[in-house]
Length: 622
Image (cartoon, rainbow, N blue to C red; front, side):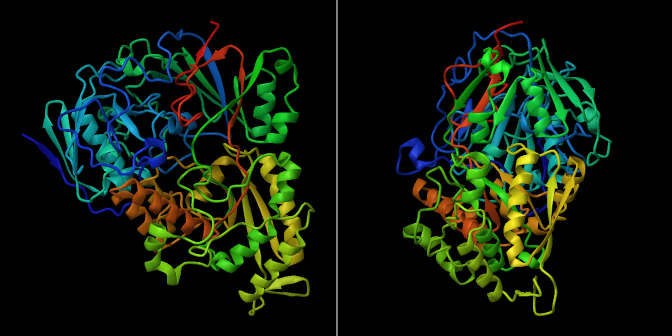
């Protein structure tokens, strides 16, 4: 008898990437692909690039030796091994390395915009409209303790994550009308919302062992070691300082074609450091094996240390075809101070990117001009036209200036103080009711323009703490002529996570990577529910019906042209919303690595992206 679960009505606030690009698939329209029968994989559009009898992923080498250790690093600390809940500061590898310890039903290929291949599942099946999806588990799938992965584990995991897990899981779960066991090894999800991405999203949720977690408070932070079905098990843990993962010699999927050439290291070790500067010094000393350099000037200037000159460390630039994403200082519009777009534009005018970029990075990296810059999904220059204009037209009255007419960031000046920018900022602030009185910027009620810039003292994944501090220091000098009172607060990573999860900041450093296939996750990033619900990525607190409408248009698009237009329209809403003061971005990934590490000649479409390193890398020495 079928076991059926019907979900509660939860508004969408989460998800993961969606549709392909016309430019990448070379077609003018997106057919409503259907799986006439159970298949080995599923693509958002068309068919998977790899056949059912694939030998291995194109960016993996099945001849790669399995041995050795790779030593990686993260800034900050951790106090939880449970990355699936909001509480705690989870260890980063379990969050960003898919299928390391805990696997999903399907594995994403990072050589295609959005295609999944069966991993824990043996087959996937859906209808032409993708109103439901059914997975059949592999009979040989096992957790690391030898117990089988069952439909019961799958159903418990989905229900628990969807009702008690991190907010990123809730939106997708709210679109599930029913979950039912349809056979000894099969489970079907039926959807209550027209959304063609859902069939793929259901293949990407972590499958936990029910017997381990049932009866516990799943929402609590925990250092309990999770039992997963992945190729690695958790090894030594020094809370807050280091964690290692040991390759499981009895890994159930070690002979699957899909895993050939992957999971080659005997041990993957992560050490945590006080900040990014300490990490770099450890890399120079040979204590860690990989360094991602975000600063072009340092890349050219600071790599003359002995390990490089001796050949022990190799510098490489890894190409990729993904969007720039958004990186910079975000303004929290929950604070009335930043609720007016004119104030936010004034803050952008005062930020002299040209000088900052030349001073700190040598001026080599271009500025982020929009959220999807560096890709065909980016908004066009000038006024909106065609389908983009049609999509935005119903919201024209509520859109800030520049959304429809065209928006561009100020050029800046070669001098430290951009006087033209400061004059424009003063004019905008006066329009918004702020004037300088006795050297202090105040409103009509006499309230000073005072705010806090919250920073993580350990830095971020893309910028060292010292670089962020330098950017902020230069910016503070530019704000002085405006009469603003800005205070910088440095917090450790745990405090920083707690405050940003609950949006208790005025301005902070912000980084959001975006893919070639944006979809449901965009609601978690920019959706109105994130204004009040903790744990979303909507740090700016934006509540823009136009943005949610563009996301809905993306998910319902039936042609590649309509899809691209919807993303370009969303890009306009986000960029002209003036929520983030953007900085520059590298057009390649700059990797310095130990010479004993290697990877296949074919670099995937996404380049240096989770799923490639350390997954497809190996050691050339024991």
